[in-house]
Length: 86
View 1 (cartoon, rainbow, N blue to C red):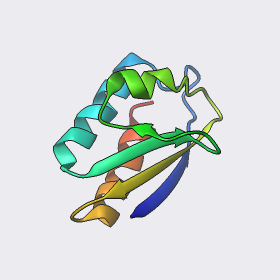
View 2: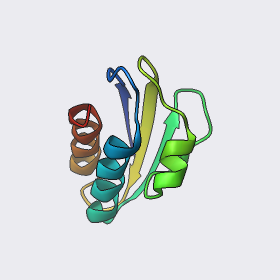
View 3: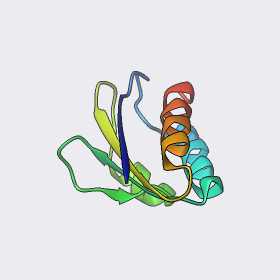
View 4: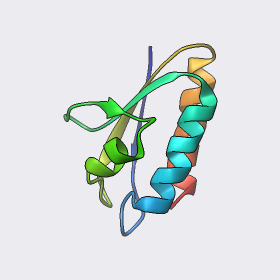
């Protein structure tokens, strides 16, 4: 399992469009991925409802956990997707 953290800088946090882009990237990766606010309960990152339900806002630190083939590369790519979607 690979873990990455990222601080969300978008003034409106992870709203519908960035959440959809992130979920699509998770699904395409073929890995098992969870996302959580730092210190919070992990949610399946392949579900837009789960991602949106976290209520991630600007300044929140999120933790991604990735399991599967190429987990290191996938984790790095997903962090980039989260940060670029802003």
